[in-house]
Image (cartoon, rainbow, N blue to C red; front, top):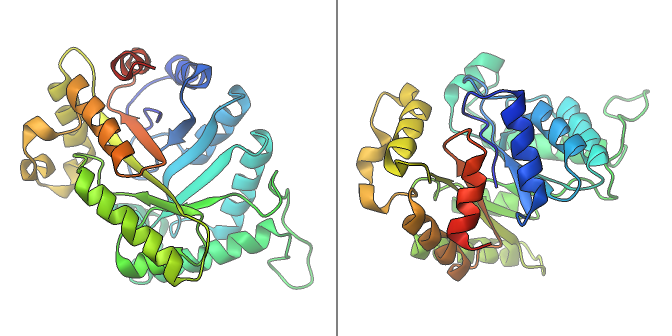
Length: 289
C-alpha cells in the first residue's frame, strides 16, 4: 500500500497511514517521489515510516536517482535501512519529470548512464569503500550485508539489459492508470529474458504500481487527482484511455489485482488518490483481506 505522498495532508493523517498499513495485512508501505510538486520529501517520509512501523517492508516507488547526489543518498538509505532493521527496498529510475532535473541542475541527456553510475557509487558506499582517496568510508553501512536491495523502474529492452547487471528486479512503470494483464505478462517475460541473457540464474522480482480510488465518487476522485498530477504536461493524459477501464472503483481494483496475480506480479503497489486513511479500510473490504 502506498502513502498519499502527492496529496496535501498533515501529520495526523500521515501517522495514521503508517500505523494502519503496518497493522496489516499489507506486505509493504510504498513512498513515491517527485521534487517540483507539493509532495513530501521521500527521504524524510522513509525515515519517519521506519521509526513508526515495525513489520511492513518499506519501498520507494520510484526514486528519481540521477537528480540526487549518489554518496549522500546512499548514506541516507543506509540510515533508513538501519532504522527499519533491514526492511527497505529501494526502487530507482530516471523519472518522467524534466522540471525535477532543471530544479537540481542535473543533466537529462545522459540520465540513463548517470543512473548506472549512481548505482555503482552507492554500492561502493554500502560496501564501505571510501569515495575519496585518503579518507575513510561513508557510514553507516546498511543493516544487511550486501546493501539495500535495488529494484529498477524501467521497461525498454536496453534499460532492462542494464538493470539486469545490478538490480534484484523490475518495477513496471506502465500500469499506473490502466492495468493491462497481457502487457504486464509480456513485460514480465522480457524481464526474465533480460536476466537470463545477463547470465543470472535467479528469477527477478517483478512488481508494478497503480493508482486506485474507492471514495464516494471514485471516478471523480481518480480523474481529479491525475488531472492535477499531470497538469504541467498541458494535455489531458486520461483522454488516451477508455474511462470505464481505468483503475478506479471496486470492480476495477479487484480486476486489476487478480490480473496482476495472473500476470506473475510478485508485488502490486496500490497508490492512493486521497489522503483519507479510510481508503485503506475500503481497499481491504474490496479485496477481502
